[in-house]
Length: 172
Length: 416
Ligand code: SF4
Image 1 (cartoon, helix red, strand yellow):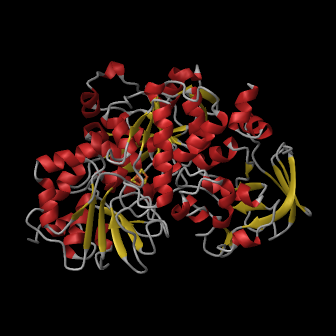
Image 2: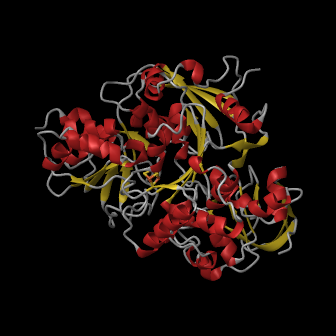
Image 3: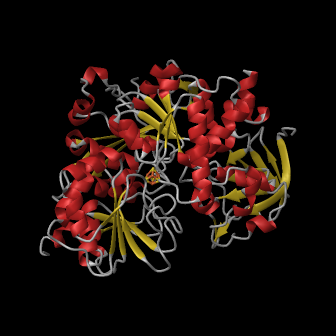
């Protein structure tokens, strides 16, 4: 799989009432009822299966979608499933105002890009905008709207480009 | 400028002279995986581990605690897959009888002050209770740690929290943790290493430190480090010189103080651990079930206290009281001292050691509308079934079980 630094896809903005959905924890992303699943391909169907308003996400998601959330996305447990379920659906990236620390490194280590956009206003982007996420510069843009996020750390970028932590280690 | 505690631990574990913000590869003293995600660790090692998938066998082990003994076939399969891998690679398994991995690691004195531990448990930062680094990570990270003995880590910024004053009698470590959650919510300490100071932590028992540190995850912090006090040093049989402390001239990103003088028991109402109230404001809530246990409140000290409060009292009609000791050793002590009988006679259900109600309903889930008081650490929607979970300390849990509604330990004194 080529490791692109510019990702293009449809935005899936997670909203709660009028605001970007914050504090989405790992049980909302991937419920503990399905933790015994070990095959990544089987995990997609459970993505957001416990997130109010988005329980049908797995049916509606399209490959190359980009998920956008508020603060503290992926807080909670250390389950890798909460990253892998998106990979299984072909989701390209998750971006959020901020992430739970464990979630962040799980994503990075499995070569799944995430970008933090601290302070992103709730309504800058529109649902299902066609967006461009530049991993090099940390910017998200769609139409005339643009937001500058944080740069990926060097380690994160290198692991992403290698395709995951083990692939990265092989090159060290 | 001096170094914060986490900077010192990471510097001494391969991070050279690291500072907050540096990304360093650190040496890991204890590498663990539990039954949850352990099978995926094995899967990664089978795929990427090559002929020698384990760096140092004596530092690497599995701890089964989530679903013990397995009550679903997939969990049983995962555990068996781990056992076979462990046998082949000569790794120790703390099997379904042992209890919660994070507690076993402390009980066995593997996680001494200043050491580093990682595993597939998001509450492994409980090692902060003994002034050690611990961190839960996903299966890729942990497989990598098994293979190489190292992980990469971005050294977090450190903040200092000083607890001013002493709480009221009957207030526990859990109440203080909840007061911190109320103050900092799940955002303010996000990604930080938190060092906790003050008179209360200087006197706290090891078990109290465990309870307080265990809520770091819910605060969004990387870890809540408690500088080892005499109780902790005694437990490990070491002196201050053998432990690690922050430099006195450390400049912290933030220097908070939290007034706990006279603090009364606290309770976190659903749907989040940061939704905290004084127990006295919630006493009109009827209770259906009470869970006592978990990595937050499942130690011998906790369960002894529960047993003492229950002695000679009975659980209110229609209330389920579920009690789960954290480890087999705890179980044994409770058994030897007759404390299990106090719990049993009061109407409690005592289960085998482990995570109990927390991970996948080992001792039952909650149904729609059911109100549960739990001494564990999470009450997010759907986490423990469809019901509404409140988080509290031992005293509140027991008093609520006996009175059949949310009650503080102070109200219990009037009931026989
Ligand atoms: S008791 Fe609950 S929170 Fe603690 S380690 Fe077990 S599953 Fe995790």
